[in-house]
Length: 533
Image (cartoon, rainbow, N blue to C red):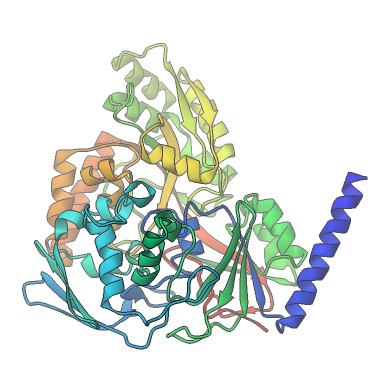
């Protein structure tokens, strides 16, 4: 009886969606996403799930990556200049850009320099009235050292700002194109402050982007409508719906049933069927990513290098590539993918060697092993499509050298929050590059600033490594920077704060009538140019 009721409800919902689609000229696009956003403001988030739900839909940056590339182009700033000493960046702002009108906010003016100052100073100035909203933790901004890099942010006039740096920073412009530098409405912020509702700025977003936020049913659905006044051209679809579907097999079933137009992270086991399906097409791209197991080096026994090396040798990573990725990945030996310049292919990896792992544990004082916990990813990510299964394989491998592992997991927002605070012992995580620069991997994920900011999940601070990475930021010559990054990778491998697991291939599956979708090398999903034929 219950199954019958569910089927009837499903048919009714399908009928309503179909009717609504006809009323809107079949221009409602449904995206089956893999998880719930942690917030709707990329200043306070760090995960791709949240970026897709806010940065790539609602907001814009001064400069942005050109579609499908890591090349930087104009956005809210129509042009920019860089001083000869590489320390002053002047941005000339675009005129005529409108903020979204929503149920909770109606703008009275267009975008200008005040919005940029409000947005950046919220992260930069600790005395800013919004700085402590949502906890005052800006993982990207602080993890990348922006607070110490920036000397001043100056409003020249309503359509020009200057950012003055304390020293040159080679990846600065690429960092400006990243999601966390999105521009919010200062007027909306002022309204919320007057109403004593400042926290709503992170959950009820107002931006200038291609889609206007309408509603969010937690863990279920997010709804947007097209921004017909978008400065870069109105989207071709009228409505965008995120159908939150954590299970990859369920996402595939929804795609086959016509309930989704595009799904993220299809299961590797479904790829062959998708390739031969009549009404489905599959896109693929090289992944600018790394999946890893981080060991919390602030907690025993993971503060011991020999223990960390033993775990590296105990895990049969090649078997994970076969069992979980079904061959659509390669074993990772470095913390950045081989498609990024400065990748050090000369680094020697740890071979699978349980006997040597046991010897290292004995040397470290753990002859009989120890008990610990391992947090497994609760969502499918490009760098790890099945965290639970991988956790079970890791658990079995570590048991063979005497390490008894209890598997733990949380919902995605809780997982990220707890791990950024260092509550874990070991955890699965990964990274998809934000800007194509090695700094985006080595400094954010492994630098000392990242420990305090919450982006360095191994809680590993090595002065020699950190010195090399920070020195590379000051140099514009790519050959010199590359040499420093290659040395840093050697230190990383020798100290072993992670087990580097895999670099995976990116897949997106979609209905045959989807046009205009391009895989983003930085891992995002953008729908402003997507259409349904």
